[in-house]
Image (tube, rainbow, N blue to C red; front, side, top):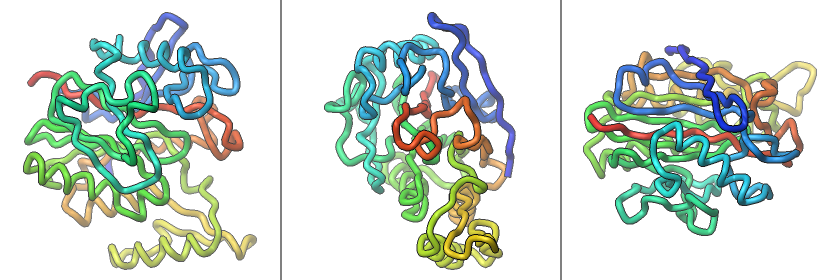
Length: 284
């Protein structure tokens, strides 16, 4: 799989903020990337570019932080569209009447929604993470875009695949035309789980592919009751077996737990901000 990513630094009103992006975006009229945690106004423990309302940060700080991102994108904050993420498997199309859902508060975000997609230009889709995998999807044939929230539930529930299937129903999207980006998230050396969840992933992997399950689940010899899961490989393989060309998939490889530029729910014991995977179509 293509591992090519780039880090982009942007001068903002409160210092430099940065985001990671797959190199393939330069070939298309889109903007996509995943923010790091610096360059905003939020105070500790959300310091500083927290982009989510639901974590306990001051709402005005979140609005100011979001304004930094959308100014760079060249649109107004009221165009931001997002779901109220619940670790579920629901994907929702952002149509004209849903543009701006969740822009200024979690109370207006789309309920029970962990993936959003659209073919409308100049509508930034936001997805919030602090260890879960943010998956960006671009259908290059139909000029449509999506963001999907894949923690372990979204991964084993195949939400990225379900999202593309929803895009197929709406726009005619085919897996072979999609480009994929997996943003900063918990890596295979950090995602320690109990043995039961490890076995669930092993069984799901064997149902998916005949490749060795050590590509996605490892059982360390010194911790017989633990397993380590590679969400990146699991999500990537699920997309490949459904028809996404391997060379269209970019796994960023940034481990949010070990990378101090990232928010990490696990490292910071649940009290932290959220990064945003953002994606926006431009005019063709």
